[in-house]
Image (cartoon, rainbow, N blue to C red; front, side, top):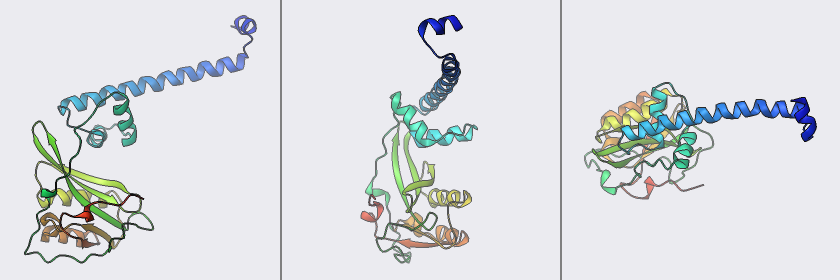
Length: 217
């Protein structure tokens, strides 16, 4: 090897560093390819309905801790596409008998630090086996989905599971605000009691209108 380096004018220490890095790069490439195969398997098992969020959660459930952004990148690079989420205004069903909570954020979709103000919403996802419903909890400081739940129904348990997981994951501060529209899932006694149990205050906006859309920062 010394002779080859001398003939080619290579620095031997640089060559050995490159060689060691090459092995590390190969290991990383092999790891990524293995992850890509697992992602494709999960996507195939879901009949193409799973996107990056659901696949990330399933990977975590099987002990493979991976960042959602990495999963999304791998899917994008390999043309693995989940069914696009589509919002439907018909998802919001106001309970006319429920007393609405006050609007505590007054159209101020910002927060000085994480854990203080959240918004929730329900999204429908069409699949080959029928509709799935996704309830999200978004922190207004980071604009990120801090937790979510999914089910084949839109009962109160769907939104309750999402905010409960956010709380158990340490995402919520004491006396935090949870803002939503006036859909019956959010205005139910069951959900209000849960927020009180979690030391959170409830705020509501109008039903099925632009309160469901968070302005981009």
